[in-house]
Length: 274
View 1 (cartoon, one colour):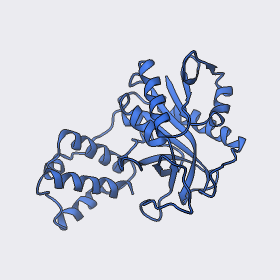
View 2 (view 1 turned 90 degrees about the vertical axis):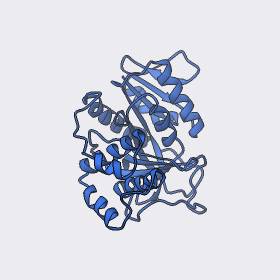
View 3 (view 1 turned 90 degrees about the horizontal axis):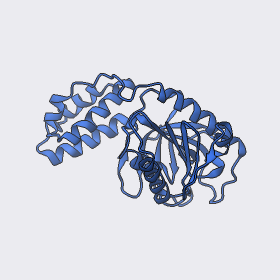
View 4 (view 1 turned 30 degrees about the horizontal axis):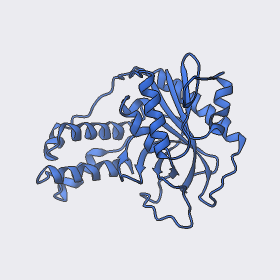
């Protein structure tokens, strides 16, 4: 089963028509067929998280299912107009928490980072830290919320965010181009087909990080985050060994205690993803 979440009805219009989805008898704006549940959550993180959690809980989702959050986003930096991107890093502007979708299998779309905030993005008054200058950085109001809620039910490689650049923060009122719905539809259908073809627990070689975890004084949760980051690095062709060697040469490793190790882990994840 695939679960699709969009903020706006316009974003979902072509998917609803293409898949012949019918309104479900719920309080939420859900449309269904035998293998798809599409939910229009409304805008904002609270609406998105509530709708996502309610739908996945009520449908008894399993780890064989997938979640796709798709819709428009503003470009903070380097986003191509009408360009569609798959998100490899999400920053929640409210909690300052970062999330890292596990892009297994790899997407054919270019990757971007996403910042999720509670208010519309305005380029004229934004004060947002957005990483390295060569990164593509987008902004929306739902992505982090959907990913956080979906993560309670599914592993990271079963959740994917697809964002289409609609604007550059020039105005609060965005005219929705009907062509965007078709672009979103094509991306969702393509990505969901790829994701559903992969087993719920794909065979992937987890890098040997026992020594590094020990140097970080890593807890079980920290070790899992470390493994995920290193798997991503190897899939993306990033030499994480060189980064670790720099940390050791600079005296960051081994860490003095668990608290320091946690800070170094966050820096390592940041350096890998950026």
